[in-house]
Amino acid sequence: MSNLNELHVIFGAGPVGQAVMSELVAKGKRVRIVSRSGKIDAPAGVQVAAGDAADPAATRACCAGAAVVYNCTNAPYTAWPEQFPPLQAGVLAGAMAAGAKLVVMENMYMYGSTDGQPLTEDLPYAARTRKGRTRARMAEELLAVHASGKVRVAIGRASDFFGPGVRTSAAGERIFARAVAGKAAQITGDPDMPHTYTYMPDIGRGLVILGERDEALGHAWHLPSAPAVSTRAFVRLAFEAAGYPPRIQTLPSLLVRGLGLVMPIMRELAEMLYEFEEPFVVDHSNFARAFGDHATSLMEAVRATVAWYQEQAGGSKHTLKPTSV
Image (cartoon, rainbow, N blue to C red):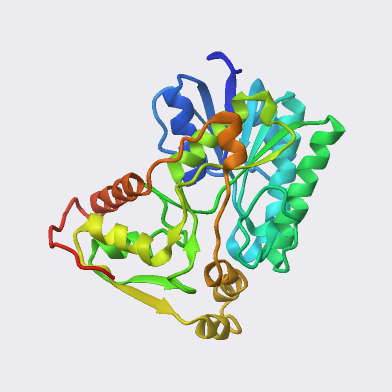
């Protein structure tokens, strides 16, 4: 278990890094958060540092004195194979120099399509997509480094995430910003397939738990999520919380793939369409048995997310009684 005097260093100031920071601050921990610019809106008492996570010299300096390091970095979606591995290598170097535990945020891409089988941590890494293969190589590297004794590593994995502050996600602006504006949610795939969505504060809490518990080391863990629902049901909850009748606009898969021939970002989205064209249900029972199940109820999480988006839109609320999808 950690103590209040230990320093926790977070690389990445996006929604995941912010969620980890909030959880650590709530626990009264010493926190240093690192971004390339060093310009972060952080609570009083949190150290803010500028540093390139891909530069081992910078990460060693940023990790000085750390007991736990959290890798919450991300690479541009169109440049994962080129830019993501160097970020991991840099943070690994910093954690190694400090002798710190390393907690890493991952997603589910390494598994590839499971034909609707629930996602568990013992599945093979069978991804056929370039982002999935990149994730698989990075995960294998982390576990190999842990096995070598060079760095103590724990991995947390989550599905498509949502929550206050989350914009660029399948469950970000395309659902919530449009819901609070009364516009149709924009989705891809089959809206009636069950899909796991993970609430960002639950991700932050889960990653901090992995940093606290030595029995988490050397393993990948699926972080707690509310039970899977269809994307249609998820959208309905968002619109009900926003006070509008639910509306869905589905972008046809053939169109997404066609646009991918000429648009790099659509090409990256197209290769991951399988996640929304078949059941995508994440099993976090291993985490729940080991550390407890802290998943926020989907209704509570959606309402908090809608409230945040309403604040961003100027605080307006709508009270029209919704209808069913």
